[in-house]
Length: 204
Image 1 (cartoon, rainbow, N blue to C red):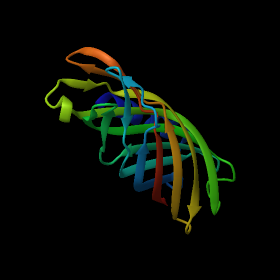
Image 2: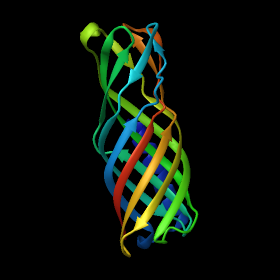
Image 3: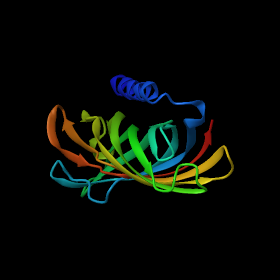
Image 4: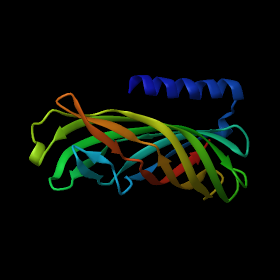
C-alpha cells in the first residue's frame, strides 16, 4: 500500500510541476461510494463464488489542466467490507479493501459548465486486509492477493455555484485476486466491480 500511495503521490506531483497549475484549478471532493462486484465472481475451491457489495466514505482531489482535461485521484477514506459466499458452503470468507485510483478525465462541455459530463481512463490499486475464514472455514489460513488494473469512468458534475459542485460517477475496476488456502492456490476471485459514487466538491 505504501508503494501505491507513493506512486500516486509522485504522479500527481509531477503533473503539478509540468502543468504549472494554479489554485483555481484544484478541487477536493468527499462523499459515499458503493462497490458492487459483478454477479459471477469465479470458481474458488471448485465452487462458484459470489461477493456482496458495500458502501463507504470516499475522498478525492483533481487538478484541471484546462477546461477539458482533469487528473483525478480517488481513495477510500475508510475500508469497504465484503463477504465471499461459495455455492454449497455459504459465507466462508470476510475481508476489507481500500481502492486507490488515478485517472485522466475528459469533460465534453467544459469543467466549468453547469452540467459537465465526462469520461475517463485510469489505473487502480486495491489493498486487501483482515482476510479471514468464517463459518465453514473459520480459523482456516485463507489469503487473497492485492490487485491492480485499469479503470473506466463515466460521470458528470453539477455546479451549485462558482465554488461548490456535486459529482455523480460510475467507475468500472478490473479487479482479480488469487485466493490461497494454507499457501495452495484454490482459484481466482474475479471481482470486477462497478463503483457508484456521489460526492460534493469545492473548487479553489
